[in-house]
Image (cartoon, rainbow, N blue to C red; front, side, top):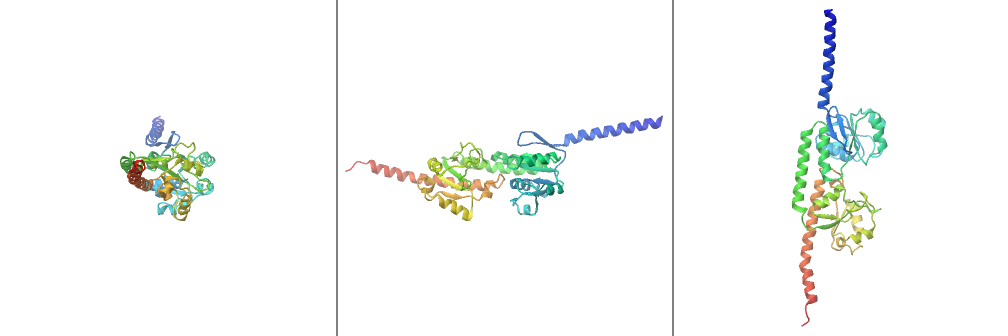
Length: 319
């Protein structure tokens, strides 16, 4: 009888232990909102991550979680250590067998950039998939914090995100209220493409006191005609390119002298990695854009006295 009583006590103890373990696990689970606003849950920090976009890989390294990236996609080239990570395809198509061989405990996906079919397939196989997106400068700081939480380095993520926000705020205070400068940002040449006001590059332009001349376009990266650019009369043209490509794109604008930016030689190439990826390196591009727009303002102020003087001469009575 005593033996049965002991067995019952042991069963009760094990049951309570399992129950306590489940409660403790629930309390310690990592809960982070994804791009849809839903709560994403991980039972423990991710240690074998698949990154499905170059900017995601860069953000992970930025918060000190790069060592846990087991696989990534083409063009994940920053920092240098990212070159050592196994490639599992590109942002649109991935090698499923390679991914499975890496035994991932988390896939970080790019909402709108990765194939929805691939994401559904990964989830169907029981692999946790976290969807993320970055359409604004604010989103970049949010992703730094969220990726840090998902990898158990929340303090470091908070430090990096806070530093990022501090620099942005310094630029905002210094430039955002300055006289507005009209800006055309060229993403591609054939077809001619730009960005609308919901893109983080447009956020940079606004931060620096600029006005994206196609901010009201309906799609994120609209195709526009040269005539539309001429009509928009930008005072500055930026091209998302460097080297020979930048020189070619900028030279193509020289024939359109009726555009203020062309007439005043305010044509500039921007290194894509400093502004086209939603990562902390966008601060480099932001600082350059702010400096250039300030240069245009000074140039415009210098022209005003000459224009006024010219106008005075025109209206002065003949003696």
